[in-house]
Image 1 (tube, rainbow, N blue to C red):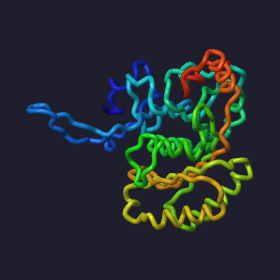
Image 2: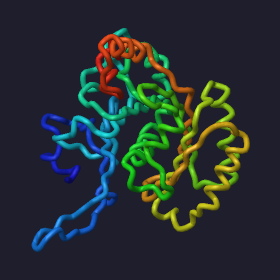
Image 3: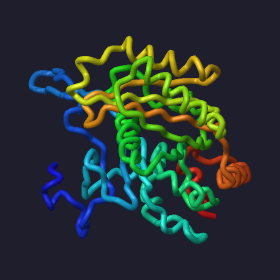
Image 4: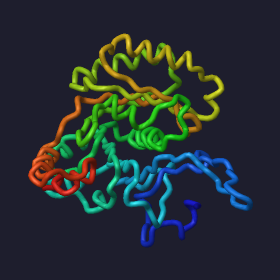
Amino acid sequence: MSRENALDRPRGATHASVGLYDPADARDRGQDVVFSLGEVVRVRDPHGSVIVQALGRPLPGWATSMPVLDGCPTVELVLLHEASWAATPSRPPPRLRAFSPQMRWIVHAAPLADRLSGEGVLPHAALRISTPTSDLDTVGLALAAYARGCERLIGCDLSDVLAVTGIAGDLTADGCAVVVEGRADADLGGRMSVALAALAAEGFEGGRLLIQLLRSEDLPAFTLARFDACITAAHAYDSGHSWVATILPERDRTALILIAFRTPYATPATLRMRAVRAAHGGAPHGDAATRSPTTA
């Protein structure tokens, strides 16, 4: 589906702001299996579906707008460049309730942090990550590619994010992302240790997620030994925290994305929903279980 083809865009949209992260070169081609004479089926490995919403700017180029999207994706990734509704006490826009994902991750521009901290300003999200405005789309790409689950050079999956952040069930973890240009090595690891010390001083004492984005031309010179040296240097001054680290090749930028998280917690809306579930003998868990009370 071509982004240039106007028929591919949602009707009435000048600039697309919602779409799917589904790179064609990352789709599993599968293998043909003969089940009986004349019956051949192509069997493919499943990959997570990632819906992307962008507020305040058009959909980034690494996501594709589509007129039809699944209502229950694996991950909904919300990129908040602006949040005008948060200037005064109000409910989030209806578009933020259009999907019922297994997990919702929100990445927002750092200047919005204070406005987004109020109760009911955002729908329930497993991860809420702050980053400088200039790095927001890059952090979003790293998270989308990680969630999609088919492009990593080091094997890890969504269960590793759950483990390192502690967001099992209906908990939320706040994070702060730092983007450092370049390929991982011991020197870069030393620079990251300084960033980690600053983040720890601000209360980000939870798990760490490290993602190396690599352009195609930088991949041949990259080695796992350099990546290990980077992690070792950073971890030397950050002991006691859980880490997940991986490498995403074939990107349009070479940079390290480091995300440090706070200890996970239950939001007031989540606590209210737990009380409702208990009063009614239980209800489904996950994002759908906290869907209505998050704006109460």
